[in-house]
Amino acid sequence: MKHLIFVFFIIASCNDSTSTNQVASVDSSKTKLPDTIIKSKNIWLDRLNGSKYPLPDTIGGRPVSFYLDNPKVANITKAFYKGQFRPTDNDSTIQLLSYVTTNDSILRPFYRWCLDFTISISDGALGEYPGIPALAYATKFPKEFLDYMDKDTSGQRYKQWTEIIAYSGLDNYNRKESEIESDIISKMHNNCYFCGGDTKSRIVTFAKDITNSVKLEN
Image (cartoon, rainbow, N blue to C red; front, side):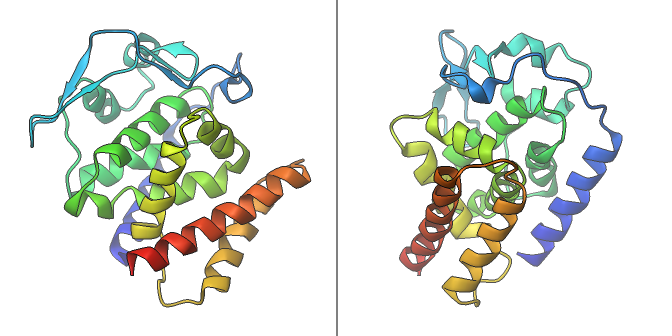
């Protein structure tokens, strides 16, 4: 676990140092539209078990072609969407998921989809990988994270993210619940600029939901 955490933050740091930030013309987190809109007949075929998943045409309020045709988007994330790369328990998966914490607000929705989709197909050894970037994204962009969770009105996305963080996202599972919660809350509050009381209360609930999920895992 410590190896995964170390490699993730090294790769994530390199990603941000080599990327060029873009200014967003539309903040998709403030719209009420779903983050991903599935209209096409495009299918993602899991090469490990043959399962089929519908692919979105629109991510973050933009057509997927915007990301696939953008030279600034990491090639491994494009390959993932196209079904040319399948996350498994290796360092390439760490690289794929590390982009979600980029400071580039234009490209981040596509990288977030890569993480979200990986979470949805995670089982077995792959489940060890999405927890760290999921928590890193939530703590770095807390308001954006909560808005993204709200776009899925079924609550399934929030449940999956909370459970995967509880399963593989914490750096020390021997700490007291209160210490784990305090650490998550502190990081999210520090990055939640101008957040109101309701949002800060949701952050506290999120931290508690994680520790509750840890107890269920045990």
